[in-house]
Image 1 (cartoon, one colour):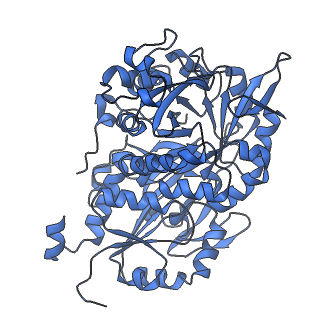
Image 2 (image 1 turned 135 degrees about the horizontal axis):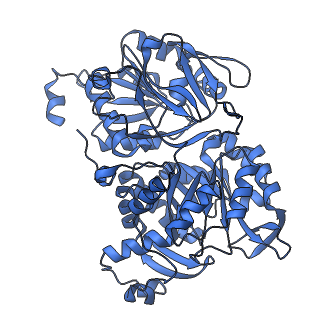
Image 3 (image 1 turned 90 degrees about the vertical axis):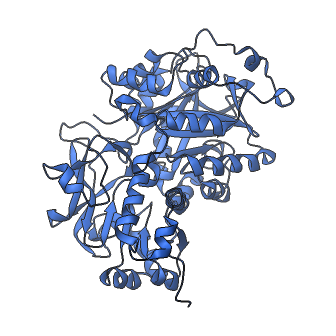
Length: 295
Length: 234
C-alpha cells in the first residue's frame, strides 16, 4: 500500500497566515514562516501556501514568504491563488515553490492547463476544484471561494483537467471548508475514481477520524489539514506581535478553540493513520521531528 | 582563467525543472553551486548535477539545442563526478520508451520504462507516483553495501520524496544501489557506476535524509582532500 501524504495548508493574506470559515470570515493567526517551520519539523509531507486574496498588492509579500520558507524547509511547497499567466507560475517557482495549484484561470481558459503542463511538466501542475453540492445531489464547480458558479459538473471537469495534463487534482468542498465537520467523502471518492492521477482532499478536517475516513472511504491519495494543526501551533507558542492593525485578532487574544475542532500535532495525525492501518511517512522515537541533523 | 578559482558544482540548466530547489539544498549543506548552461563553467566545475522534471524527449532536445551532450559525455568519461536527479537519472540510460522511443545519453546501459496504469491485481494504479517512499538495498547486508557510497548513514526505513511516471531498468544489475516498490512494481531508485551517482527521488525535497545525501556525494566525490583551502571552508 502506498504512503498517504499529509499536507499542511496555510492560507495567506498579505504577510499573514489567516483562517476562514467557508473560505470567508478571516482571522489572523500569525506569520506563515513560523508555522511552516514548525510543521516541517513535525513531519509535514508537503506545505501548501494559498494566497486567498491574490491581489497584485499582496503578491510581493507572497513571493517573500515562499523565498524565506524554501531556504529552511526541504519538502515540496505548493503555491496557489491568483496565478493567471505562465509568468505568474514562473515567478512563484523561481521564488522556491515546487508545484502550483490553478483554479480560476484554468476554468476561464482550460488550455492554460495544457500550456502550463507543457512548459513546467505535469508534475508541477495541480488543478484545484472547489465544489458545491446542489439540492439534486449533483456537484458543480465554483470559483472565488464558492461565490462564482461556473456551470461545470465536477467529475466531468476532473477528467478534462487530467486529459489536459494536470499532474494532481485538489478537491475542496466549499460547504465543509473550515467547519471541522469532516471531508466530503462522497465527493472525494467520486473524483478519485474518475481520474488516474493522485487526488488531494481539502476542506473540513476537524477530528482524527475524518482524516482516516477520507483515505479509507474517500480513496484520497493525500489530504490537507489546516485548523487542526494551526490551533495546536497556537497552543504551544506565545503570540508576541500585535496584529490588531491587520485584521480580526480577537480569536488570537483569547486563544479560543473551536469546539468542533480537535487540536492535534502532525505527529499525532500520522501516528493515528499508522494505527488505522494506513501507511504514511512516519517514524517512531520522534526522529522525523528533529531539526536538520546532518552527519 | 585564474588557476586559483573557487571550487563549485555546476547545476546544469537545460530549461527543465526546478533548479532553484537543488541550489538551496546544496547551500544548506555548504556546497557552493551555480546554475549554468555555459560550457566553460561546466568544464571548470568540480562536479556536475543533472536535475530535471518533465519529458525525456524534450529534455534530450534541449540538451542538443544547447550543445551540451558532448561536453557532458566527455566530462564523465574524464572522471568528473555526476549527480543525476529524477529525469537526470533517466537521461543517463541508452533509451526511453516514452512516446515512442528516444535515445538517451547512454552513460549507463539500460532502458526507461513506464509504470502501468493497471497493477498485477487488475486494480488501477495512480501514475505518476507522487509522494514519500522507502529505499532498500539490493544486497542482504545494507550497511556494507551503502557504506562509502552517497547513501551512507541512510537507513532502509528512511523516506524520500518521489515524483515520476517512468523508472530505469539498467542492463547490469551491479550498478543498482537501491530499489523501491510502487503499487507492487519493484524499480531501481538509485544507481552508482564509477563517477556517476543518480537517484530517482528528489533529495532536495526529502528533508534531512535528502540533505545528507547531497553532503555525502559532495564529500565523497567532489572534495579534494589535499586542498587546504577546502578543508578550512568545510
